[in-house]
Every structure is written in C-alpha cells, then in structure tokens.
Image (cartoon, rainbow, N blue to C red; front, side, top):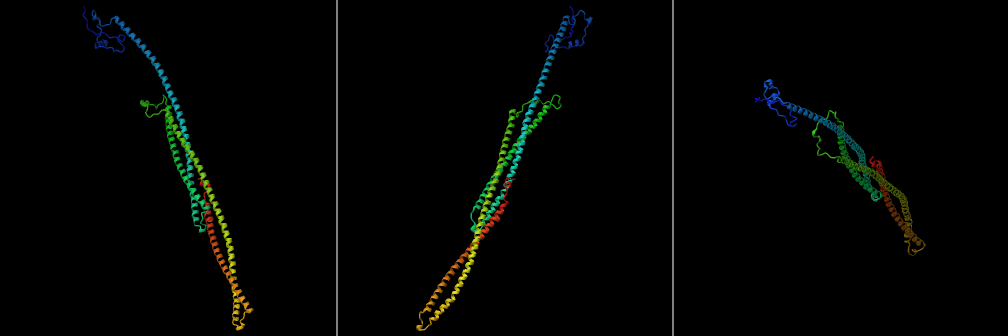
Length: 448
C-alpha cells in the first residue's frame, strides 16, 4: 500500500473531448502545476502515485490536439473560402447596385432635363406672348384715349348746331348722322373698356402660369443639380458621409407617375392659358381694326352729310339772293311807279280845278243864259272823266303802295332768311367741318 500525495495533474487541451462552445475550466491547483508552481519531485516521488499523465493520456491528448487543429484548420479554410465568395459576391453586388443607381440617376437626369427644357420653352413662349399682349393692351389704351377726340368733336358739333336760327333749326340728316356717331363712339368705348379688362385679366393669368412654370423649373433645376452631384459621387469621393436614416421613406414623397403628371398638368394649363392669350390678342387686333374702320366710316358719313347740307344751304342762299335781287329791282320799279302815279294825280288836279272853276263860273249866268249848252255838257264830261281818271290813278297808287309794302316784307323776309342761311352755313362749314378735320386717323384709332 503506497501513500499518495495529493497533487494536481497538469492540464491538457480537452477541446477534442468537450464541446467547442463549452469553456474549459481550470482549478487553481492545476494552474499552479501548469505554471510550475509545483514541479515534479522526480526521484523523491518514486514508489508513489505520480501526477504525470499516462502514455495513453498523452496519446489521447496529442490526438485530440491534432484533431482539434485539423478541425480548426478545416473550419478556417471553409470560412476563408466562404468569406472570399461572400466578398466577391457582395463586391459584385455592390458594384452592380452602385452602377444601377448611377444609371438610374443618369436616366433621372435625362427625364428632369427633358421636362426642364420643356418648361423653359413654355416659359419663354409665355413671356413672349405676355409681351405681345402687353403691346395690344397699350394699343387698347391708346385707342380708347383716341376716341375721346371724336366724342368731343361730335358733341361740339351738336352744340354748335343748336345755335342755328329758328328756321334752320331742323333735325336734318347731319344731326341724325351725328347722333349715330355719338352712339357708335359710346358703344366702341364700352367695348374697348371690356376688352381692356379682359386683357388685364389675361395678362395676370399669363404671369401666374409663368410663375407656376418657373417654380416647377426652379425645383427641377435644384433637383437636377442634386442628382448630378449624386451621380458624381464614387467610392473615392472624400465628401461622402454616413447617414443611417437617409434610407427611410419620407411621407411626402410622391411616385414617378405623380411627378410626371404634375409637370404635365402645369404644361397643359400653361398651353391653355397661352391659347387663350393668343385668341384674345387676335380678337383685340380684329376689334381695333373693325372699330377704327367703323368710326372712320361714320365720320365719312357725317362729313358727307355736312357737305350735302352745305350744298343745300348754298343753293338755298343763292336762290334767296337771286330773289332778293329781283325783289329789290321790283321795289325800285314800284317806287318809281308810285312816284309816277302821284305825279299823274298831281297833274290831274290842275285840269280838274280848271274844269270845276269853269263850271262854277258858268253857273253864275243869269236867267235864260243858264242853259245846258255844249260847253256845259263838255265841261261836265271833262270833270267826270278827270274824276274817274284820278279815282283810277288813286286805286292804282294804293295798289302800288300795297305791292311796295309786300315787296318790302318779302325783302325783309329774304334778307332774314339769307342771314339765317349764312349763319347756318358758317356753323356747318366754318365751325363744324373745320373742327372735323382734327378727327383721328385709322392708325390713331387702331392704337398706334
């Protein structure tokens, strides 16, 4: 029976026996033996239980170490192969996904550039159309201002013609044409004001549509710059950083269809606004041309009516002057006739006095001498004849004086009518027609 000494055994790698995931436990004594704290006693321990391993344990330990090394080497080789495969696969995937992202960015840049160019083209078209419409608006304003002159002329013509003398204060064709002209000018002014208001509203719509397109263009310009910068990033770029939350989908992000539809809707609305602006501009052009032609046509009608009226007044005045000349001639002749009749009556007074004196003297004859003899009868016939002659001359003188009075009345009437015609002719020709020479031309009425 041998007495044993309690000594810890040296430890060995038990990974071949224990599970790999199970840690190997070492006591303090074993650690002390392993570290050489308790070295073998050598010959001193002869005949006692030794703390050394047996040969079988040594072989087992060596085999387990070799097996574990082989397993570790195989596992490491498999892991290395798998790592190389994963590295190659992930590298290819990363390169592919990065190239796909770059390609998609390039396609996106092309789409953004295409829409941005389309927006730019429509913005320039809207800008040019707005400038053209602004020119039409200025023409409308000038045309509206130009209509004030015809309105003032027509109003002044009617006012002047109200001062015509009574006989010539008639509602003639000139007045009718002037009233038509006033009504036409009022309607043209109202139409021009309405069209001007439409032009102002259309210009506002053009600018609003242009602002919408510019806002969309600005957004696309910024997006193009950002995507272009993104497309220039590569693995060697020094300005890249980690943004862990950048892959989170934002709530306000729209899809591509909505993005395209938004720009297409803006372009469609801009086209509609541009078409409306073109139609309004053509309408303004046609309106200015038609209104200016209508005003000038009515002006020609008024001028023609004035000319005809002046011809009528001139003819009437000429006829009155001819009649006045004849009346004056008749008045002179009648005055001479009155003088002649008065002289004839005066000439008959002496023979009448002689005859009546003879009869008076012969009536003084005495008695039988107072007889109705031939001298008596002759004197009586003479007195009766002279009386009848004087009575006839007196009647003729009265008729001549009455005719002379009528001639004087006719002369006064003719002179008054001639004065009226002269005044009316002065009003129409000198005042009205001379004032109408300042009537605007078609070019002025068209807004140029």
